[in-house]
Image 1 (tube, one colour):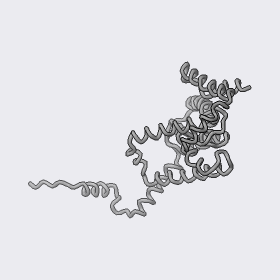
Image 2: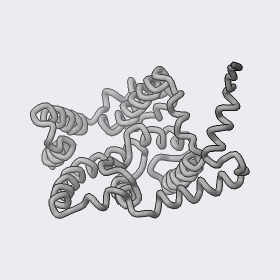
Image 3: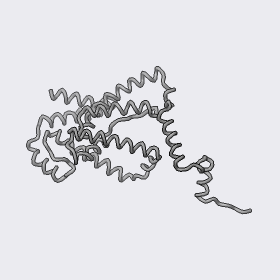
Image 4: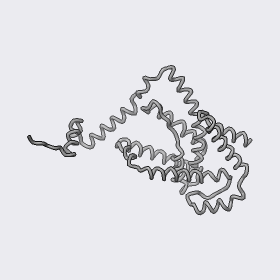
Length: 254
């Protein structure tokens, strides 16, 4: 009896033939991917059939709780990105509605993140003045282009490339984002006109020279917000500690 061992390419060819893909041209495969994507985007999500009166009441409560956390976060994310506060509200509201209507997940959290805000600031602060109309227009254009690239990557099924990003790279990215966020907010904490943190030497020199002129009231407000937020989170994680910290700093500022 003869024994025949299929090679990897032969096995792959056989699997593709079983799926009906062997005769498809690259253009036909792209068209099929577009049809599948259109079906996934505009068909009724699977979770709709699970909605009833009880789940709606629970969703309403969780939505109000989430809004109490997300809206103050949106203000902070806008400040980190160098944008006016109202753009933090836009980023917290619009993507959430779109993801809820078009998403396929029963439980999903959508909105701005600290890392994305830091990336926006880092990408644009070198060429535009943060908060200026030009900076805002550039941020909107960049968001649009990022959305197009994400759509293209999704159509090409390239999301699996993220699996090849090593843990060291992710750790370095998160650490760098944390440092950029902390240093970019020192100008607000101290109420000083500091150089941008992209130039570390100029930033450290400006911080050392301006520290004696720091606004103690601004420092007190910042420290109060941080301490109150950490205490509330430690006492009860279910409480909206961001919102409580914001209210405490607002009352102290008055």
